Image (tube, rainbow, N blue to C red; front, top):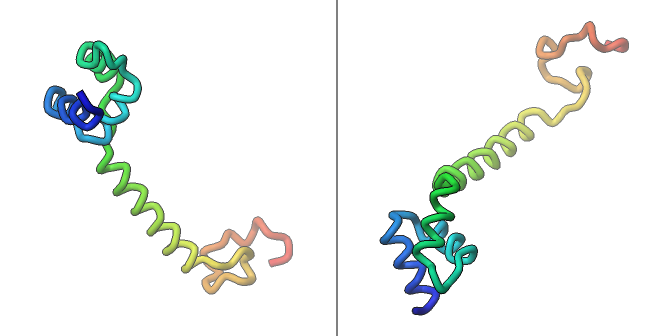
Length: 92
């Protein structure tokens, strides 16, 4: 059985996506693939691969938006001074 066939069998047998099946395949003993894969999958929760990608993209977007809006570091450089608690700074 080739690696691709084994991964396809894991995806069909355990109803998991191909990325997770590949990771399980790398960790499993190839002589007893299904039995070992069952132990590996049973011991860990299934990852949310789609959510991981979505969150990664969303956090990158937020980082761009936030850094574009707040490119100042001191209250004097702030466009709106009421956002800053001015009592915390001695020179303001």
